[in-house]
Picture 1 (tube, rainbow, N blue to C red):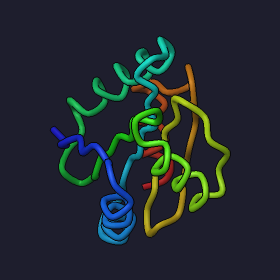
Picture 2: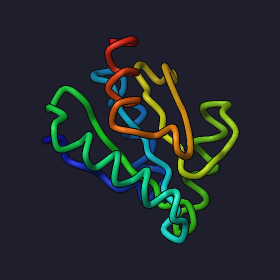
Picture 3: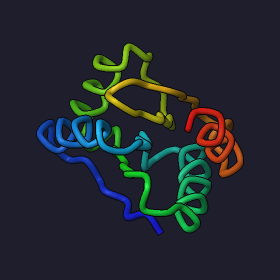
Picture 4: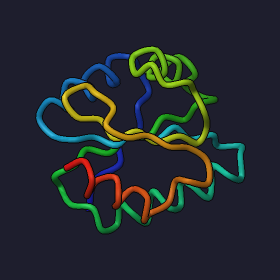
Length: 115
């Protein structure tokens, strides 16, 4: 199972971007006050239970770490939404989606199409 890392500083985000040069990474933007985000986070966690070590996985709590969430939007050029998920490799977004489109199946399909 892949270990979920919570990003709480810009330095941690920068290291995560750098690590995407070595292996793909999933970034999940999560609102801890939103029921839609809670459902998407459950889907993400279900995916992680079967994910291997060939993928780095991250979470950003958007209310608690707004600056990091904004930095992701700025660096990717993808408008902020919450919940939102990104598949990144070599510092480039290969796939992203948001809200109820975040499912275990959609994540698996994105990985199959892009890897």
